[in-house]
Length: 285
Image (cartoon, rainbow, N blue to C red):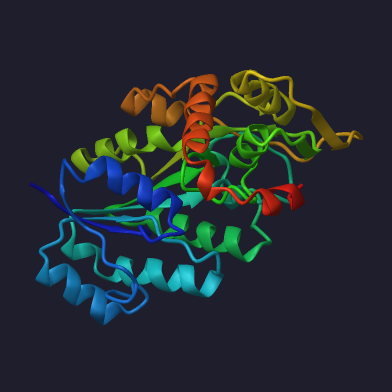
């Protein structure tokens, strides 16, 4: 059984927690908390990998800070020669969110240098991955699912509001590209078991959807006529959509239909209503 080090599985590790649930039966999975292993510490990381005979690292931890994120990435990069491969998760922010990101292709990277620290850090990581022998970037766009922060994440927030019969609020209309976190494990499994042709891939539905369409889907799933409020009705926010043909052609990726994914997520929150603080929910917009 292959030995996998999976980072980012703590209480706030949305992607890592989901992957841990889906991969633990297929691999010998190591998920040390930060108190046991700080990935920024190269010596400690190298020692941990050697002692546990780790073959593949799936790096799902993100601090959202340029210094911490880069230190974690390059700590792993320094030991990449002793690993079969490293899989990590980039961001659509690599294309620079100051501009419309419209059906972005992997070859579009580099047209703009991201201004945000987070986007710039991911941009640097991708450049390094492209020049590596065995580091692979699964670039996430609007990934959603259970364990994400329902206070700020759009689809989860609206699911929770629908359950408590609160208006479904949208700050401004936008064309977005979402992907369901449950689909990610199959792609990670492919990357673990195969040698990818490229070093970066867009992980997204590849089909733009309006935020108002999402709200209407959630209203329909709830079985109630929910009030949908568009707070700023003038124009659109910048596009955030991706081309996923590279991933589809190589892996056969077939996303869960977004209506089915939303229904599944809504049911998760309905069955776990005790995790939602209604007072906090009412204050979110």
